[in-house]
Image (cartoon, rainbow, N blue to C red; front, side, top):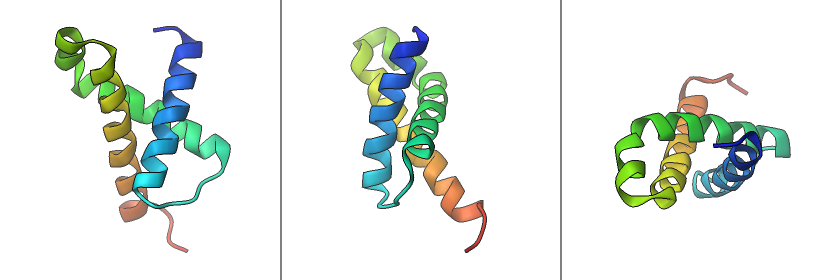
Length: 79
């Protein structure tokens, strides 16, 4: 997957994940969450990606971003 595609998919996944988890982040944090979520989800759902195509990768990216948001909210800096 090219870097441009990773950024675009990561931005979309981060946007969806932050909205589903009901947190407000700036653009760079949203993209970062999405990209890291795409990496985490991509590793976890690699088999599904092989079987069903790019849609499994997108679902994995959203789920991975949601896991990262949950970890951030649970163990991140307290306000």
